[in-house]
Each structure stands twice: as C-alpha cells, then as structure tokens.
Length: 238
Image (cartoon, rainbow, N blue to C red; front, side):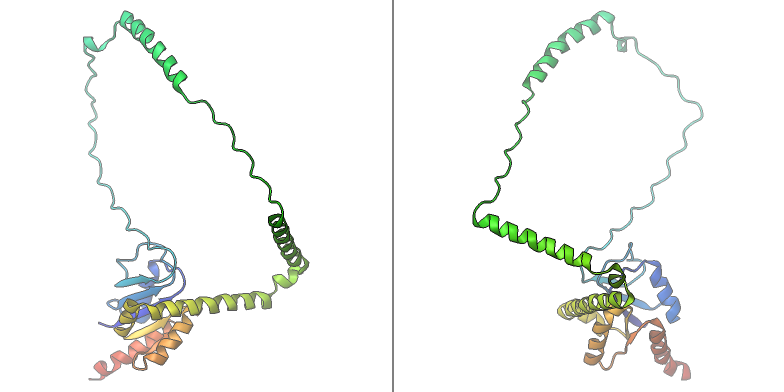
C-alpha cells in the first residue's frame, strides 16, 4: 500500500481527501497530513494521521446520532387526582401569611449597591510626556495611511507584494516547525511521495527534496499522480 504525505498551510475540508484518492487513482492509498491549520471538520475517518503544527486545535469528534424515541400510545390514561392532593382554602391563606414575613426578611438581607470606583488619576510629569508622544505617534501613522491614495493601496502590484511577503513568512515558519518536530519527520521518512499542496508549503517541500533525494517531493496532485504511476509501472510490466 502506497503512502502519501500532504504538506498544507490551508484549511482542508474532509471531502478533499476523497478527491485526493480519486486524483491519485488509488482508493486504498494511505494519507498522512502535516497541516498548519486544522481541517474544517473531523477527518479521522478520512486520513491515517493529521498532524497540526500551527495555531489552533483539531475539531472534536461529532456526537453519535441519538436513538429514536419509542412511539407514544394513541390513548393516554385518564389523569387521577388524589383527594389529599387538593389543598384546603384555609390552609393556603395560612401558608401565605407565613411566607410574607420571610420574604420581607430576605429583602432586608440583600446587600446595598456598591459605590462606583473612583476614576483613574491622569498621568503627570514624565508619564504625561510619554503618553503625549505615544498619542502623537499613533496619530501620525493614521494620517500617513490616509494620505496614501486608495487606488495605490488596492492596486494589483501592492496586493501582490503584500501577498508574497505573507506567503514567505508563512513558508519559513511552516518549514521551521516541520524541521523541529521529530514525529513529523518520522512520518515523512515513511512516505512514498511527499506533496506540497499550496504556496505556503513550497519552501518546506523544496528543503525536503534537498534532504531526501530518494523520496519524490512534488508540487500538486497531478505531479504526485505521475510519481505513483511510475511506482506501479515495474509491477505492471512484470
């Protein structure tokens, strides 16, 4: 049975792993996932292992379906009221007379409302100067941001540069976490093919390819399908 390790920095739904088996042409393939974020739902029945190396936590197992309740009978039994269950009007009036003084005692025992806390004293001396400088710095940053035209802030080149920087930072953090986890490296060592699924996992895939020349490390499922077809080719030719 072939094993594939998926490197991902995106949130994957459980149905995605059904698509992986279909794209790789093997329903019996073993799937191990190294994810930066948790899947969108429970995936223990879809993959062999899912190792979360980023922030957050794995979703909990869904509760089992409740058992069906027994059907009620069409005819309900007639209600029976015992004579001793009916209170005497005189006893009700006596009980109310006893309850009234007790309620008054409870109201008197309630604590009086607490006064509001005194306002926090304003900073003075050197602290006041520091606060003023911090306030002016925040205001200057806001003004500078407003001065940049919206057309420039939302332009394609600026968005591209911001996206590239965010992806680069994520890729480095992802690879450092992979490299620091012995359990993750042990899982990767057992793989027949390692697949980087997205841009955030490319850097980790490239580094793994340099360290493990004997294991194919590819980008995307189409490239992984070609590798698995080659693994099956010698057996088919025999």
